[in-house]
Length: 404
Image (tube, rainbow, N blue to C red; front, side):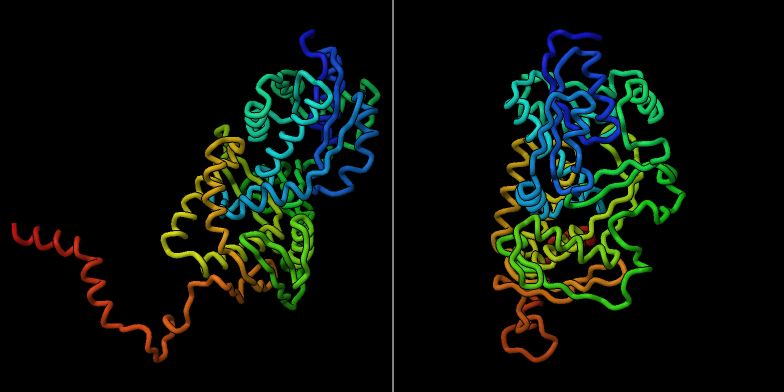
């Protein structure tokens, strides 16, 4: 399928089995130069060590590794937390949030090296193909997009291993590595193996980031989080950058088995999939943020924020980050976040992260009004008139029906 119109391709490269095979496949089928691009979004040094050498050995002409850790947390995770977005009531959107910043950086590398095409290793069954290509369409509609899994005739892990072996290209992958994983600073996801059967309980070999709640310490640990205008700025009194805040929370919460999730979710392409996620720091951050929201936001404001949370969870999951709707929702969430300042204490214990203390200078909570004891600020007799007006439409409806 030689295509002379493609001269230079920038590939989103992870060093895994799929992208290792894609480099020689692109060169053979498109007769083009392949530039490898990798994004450091906090997946860990072990996944980045030796990546450039591996890409070059597979046939890439260059390898660009771009550090996106701080920007990922500050510009993508924090705004999403402000919206309260949780997909289908459980998933904290770890993979979904990372794709737009990776795609944006890939486009920037393509512009830098003068590429005329972009390539990704996403399968034709998943959500990520939509997320990447949606971002490419918004940011670089002039660049061609190549998706090998929709073109080549290889269908299995064994096919890819054989393809690389025929070309004497080394890989650390093997047929026995049964799980598909994706990691970044926010989470790690697990799919495949026994997880393809929803009736099978995940074995401990699935989990790689958190300890089992049963094996977590028998003594709870309390941590204090400090927020300023919706952004988490300190842990236990230590001021930290957004990325370092998340690293610290991951360490503390993972040790107590916090943040495990086993879910069957609805993919954008129409099928259901079963995945396990570990989001220890993110679970704690979301719980603390919501605790401050309940102190600070009025009933109507909180209701509206909950409504945009639902919309934003689907927007992020479905790969619509670079859209006017995203900007509008983020602006709304940030307007509420201006008052989300204060401290929250979280108790970590046996897989749970429980809010036990919270305070804010902008709190609408008043002990004087809420107390069950004596007070001199609230006249309970006023409630009668309020209730009569609040239920007036029901009274009128019943009275009319009774007069027929």
